[in-house]
Image (cartoon, rainbow, N blue to C red):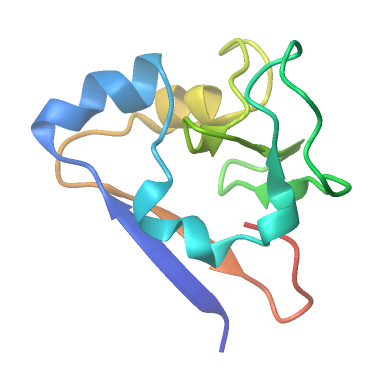
Amino acid sequence: MADQRRIPVRAEDVWTFTERNVPLWDILEFFPADAVGPRGPKDPPRPYEVKPVTIETDLGWSFETDIQYGTWVFRPRSPKQPGMMKWCQERGLGAGDASCSTRPASGRSG
């Protein structure tokens, strides 16, 4: 059975999830430690090789990303590019929904 984590969406979270990003703080331990990259391009590199995770969506597309250090979100992208904001908007995420991350037995997906 695959390991799974859920982030519930409350009414006050809908704007943040659909217009900004999904906070991963409560499920951070679910992802490999080496998936955490620097906060921004001017920050020093992490003391290890950053290895992105592949996120497979239920909408038929996937994307690779790291987790932004300090903000604890997947690397922000324009909603026109595959990423969490695009998924939240296309999914029509609303209050009472949940963002679910499932780790397959093979490892690095989120």
